[in-house]
Length: 196
Length: 220
Image (cartoon, rainbow over all chains, first blue to last red; front, top):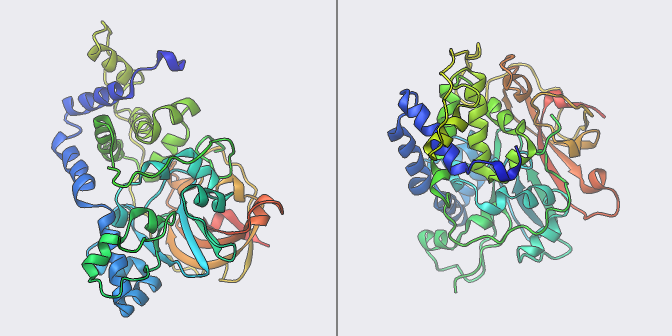
């Protein structure tokens, strides 16, 4: 079928839902619950809380880096697409960035569902071939001396980046720190900016 | 299979779109519905996550790309449901055309033909008694294989030599599990490749880490 003859995907979606609901195979209330969970309850704020805690609590940070799955479960974060979580730390000399070249696997329990750029063919294709250039396009111009480590998460192991704590945040509370942490920093395409 | 989904290293996709500060998970209502329908379709069709991924990988490349991420989820779900005899081929087209006002006959629901499949546990991580074949620090080569079925071995590491960095939790093998040929739990290794081994001497200098199943590796 040529592109011009295609049915709109919204119509296909409505059609499939109506067939499955009519036959009692899918309950729209269950669909609504799934949607609500990832629109309202599970998102990058979870990961931001993990990062802030690691910044203020050295023992937690050690547990987080040695067994990410168990450490985030302590905070209640677990679930689909986060069976195994490895947290990788950015430092003055190493910068980590995460991708899934095959489909867009992403650690849902700590970051929610993936953003558009993460799912884009340009990101999936280029970040494993020219990460420094891609990061520069995102506005992150790393020093030549910083080693880039790209993680292509094609098995069921998921990754989250522990970004560096910005300067000038010594007096902030854990909650105030969490508010600074962005989704993009936890995937590794940005740094955490100091408070404005 | 060697398909459009295996995007690592492809060229000419242009610039990555700029991140939006407060992007929501879904931009259009149909994406919400497609997301939930696809998750539920795995259960309704009696299949699994690996089969779902494969159901998207084997879409026609135009179907894979043109409606974006949740578009391929929806079409993948259609594949799973059709394969398991839950919906008839053409059923979604017919219903959609009818809802759009066309006078179309809809196919009868077929007899269900779900795969003979039962997972040994939740998720994909399983205990495995056998010792891992490789240890951290050991050199390994990704096999240069081109299976026509499902695989999670991207083309850009095939035939390349790297070093085992870490042993990951053992997992069911997607290549067999996607086709209901057994979980075939194996060790998974985080393998580190130097960028020059992957892309030659002229490219950028960086390290690529990727988690590879035991069946994808050979000693180097």
